[in-house]
Image (spheres, rainbow, N blue to C red):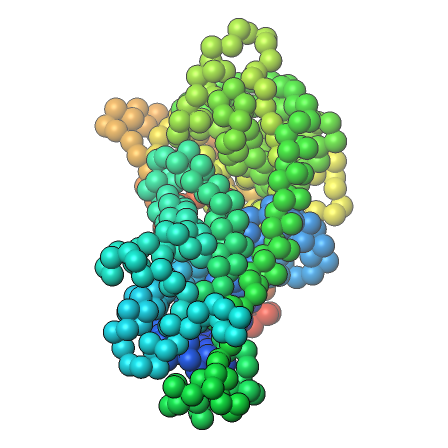
Length: 565
């Protein structure tokens, strides 16, 4: 339990607060509409479906307020910078922005479903009441015209349409109905296209459908203007407990005037106007950055179809492990893709390594391969840099860096920065030990990064700090010819694959053994575990961090951090 508190205490607290607010809003508005005197006559027509429609609407407003904030990248970077004086646990919450964004989206989807089903029932009951299928009170309430002395309660005014088609007619001709259909369709497309299989294989589909959020928010703000849920306005003059059984006396006796009804003023705009303004500022800032000139310093095609771009942009400043969004207008004016920078802050350029894993990256690599030697690459827009969990790597005494495949990129930046810090004898470097693990399926993937490791290996030996960096490379896929080649050259001093003194390991790491070793070698230390890799590996490492952490602050504690885009 104590280990869970170390790694997930604040996250759990934030989720409890968020869920508590959702529950409070649902319960409060449910009973407001289910018990409120002003809705007595409305409830008589609709029953409990009134409260079941309005309570989810309140929860929807709250979550629509939140949904845009986690994707305001510049806002998060600003907050992260202001939290540099605070604890790392607070800053870690910002790295879970996409997870929170998804969680809020799930709540919006759930509440939309409940809200929609309840209103479908409401429209059906409104229609039946308008056609005199229920008791006399329902008929009298539905027959109230919108005249000089009366106001209507039942929003279905036209009964000339076929009885079975009337609910559909109302949904497609009323403002609330049309906007409801539009925003529900937008939400369905946004959620379904966000599934992992579509996002990974057809990123463009995910990208374009996600921008339906603009239509969603416009429809959401307009939706309430239909004012189909109406309440009684003259409760003092018309006491329903006295008059509900005296329908024939309405408007004829002073104590029972006609009940007056009005729809509530739309309030969604008050919930979402702030986040919409912040997001508009975010997009304006992105556009300004898009127009700034970016020059190519160097273009290199690495093994395994990995493209290295070294770029220069005026006024660009970065920290280790940060990422940027790239846009290539020659491919698409609208698509922006995130890439972790592999350069160090000490260098006069910033670089990214791009692996061919989709239409956009394949087109970019093909475009670069066709360029004449020595020419500038296609025009590139750059937005960023933005902070990630890896920024905090030097705040820990001991760091475990785990990269899978191209996921090594943030750690390339970190290891380069370490080399510069040792070269300049930086006194601010508080990290005293780094463990680096790199998992790859094929041997070619090691090649572009091996040069940096060789330089670091040599630098550590010359300074007598060979124990500062412990790195282990794991090859998870190989064939028989490679096995035969390794067996022949097994006795050589350097590794067959990388040329490093540290030999490549075959298979996957035994994380139990690795964490046990780190804990044994670093008693009474705070260990930051950083991953840039698949979700499956993240779950494994997160469990190990919890298992091998000790609640006692005098002993070893592991803090898990993961890159999220």
